[in-house]
Amino acid sequence: MNIKRPQIPKELIQIDDFSSYAQDFLLEELPIFKIKSCEEQAEGAAFFKIEIRKGIFENCTFHGCNFEKASFVDVVFQSCDLSNSKFSGVYFERCRFVSCKCIGIDMSDTVVKQTTFEQSNLQYSYFNKTKMIDVLFDHIDFTESSKIEFPLISK
Image 1 (cartoon, rainbow, N blue to C red):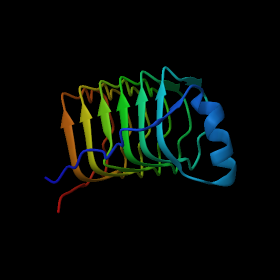
Image 2: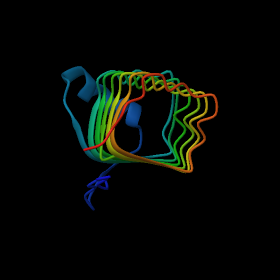
Image 3: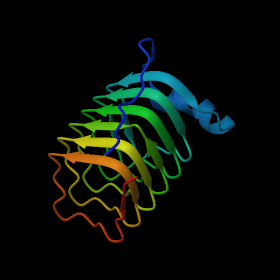
Image 4: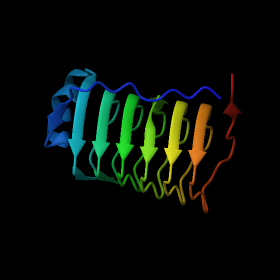
């Protein structure tokens, strides 16, 4: 297995209100680089096709948010609650999910490369047709999760 850790620079832009900050980038379809967001609270927010590179989300809550067709490269989710959010068609590369609550997330048709899920709750999550390349699951609760057509691809 060839898992590389996210490449996070030391200098990050601290974002106090990620939902508002992201809107201009979403409208212009521009990627967001080098950010850190802590304690963000969003419910039902739309982040469709958002692209985030080199970022950290810490103690954030994104309940029932729509991240469809988004892209996350070199991103860390630390102690986040992503429950009931939609991540279908998303691309993850060199990401880490650490101590996250991901109950009922939809990760169908997702590509996950060189990513780790550590000490997280993925109960009732949906992984139909998710493609995984060099992915590590460590201390994960998959109770009642759907993993139909769940190809594990390793180079």
